[in-house]
Length: 171
Image (cartoon, rainbow, N blue to C red; front, side):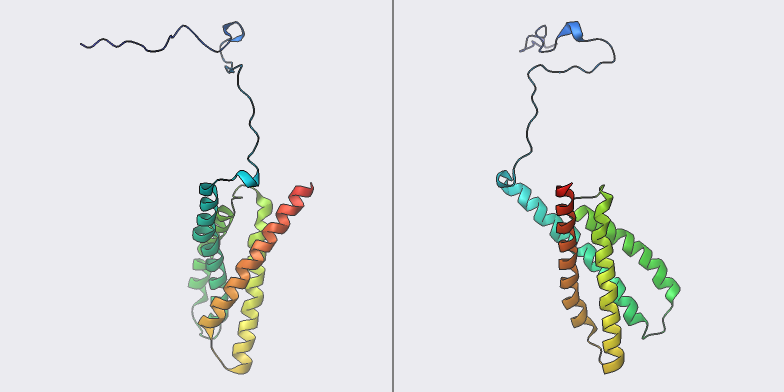
């Protein structure tokens, strides 16, 4: 059997044994608090992570909620079954909300639900606009209208996030 030799002196510790008792947390004397990195020191990988979160979580979450709400306006023209549409909508809203909150990086902070509420309300206003245009002008440019208004909705959500950040910084 091979003998193992320790390369480190196990008797030497950096903790003070006199202050160490059962059920206490051992603290290193040489530890120090580190400051949060300033925005200038954010590394390339941190910026890449933020971009990936926005591209793969925030924007698809906005699209899910926005497309579903605009879809309600389209469904009013086709007398479809609203029960199936309503049950599917609840899951889409829950998933879209989670994606938006996780995409902006504020999953636990509930005041950022303002972003989701703003996206929801802007999408409702755009759905009403689409519905009135389609009824009065008898045109149906659903795909074009959906894509153009989706970018506006995502931008409004971003502006609400910035406003919420500023209000938090003032407090």
